[in-house]
Length: 85
Image (cartoon, rainbow, N blue to C red; front, side):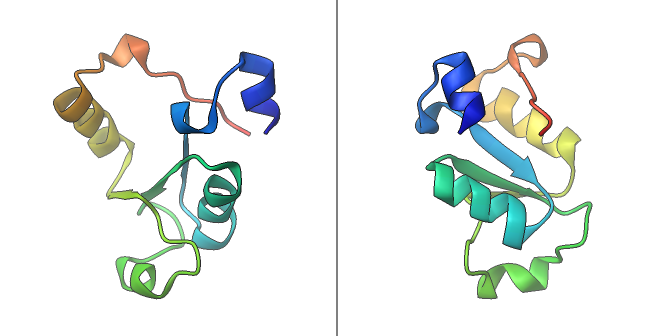
């Protein structure tokens, strides 16, 4: 929530990108943000269907996320801001 306040953003203007269902996707849901699960960490694709907080989008890696943003939303790499908490 601090990121929202500090940057004067609404929850639907951000995405929480992470590799854990029980922390990162939970935080996305609690904040009202888009949850993007990256399958480069501890979560496996098999675990997603049973998740308490399912992601809105699942990608294999950050490169795939960047490709998805460019293809679907015409976002250039220079427009992508990543906040690491």
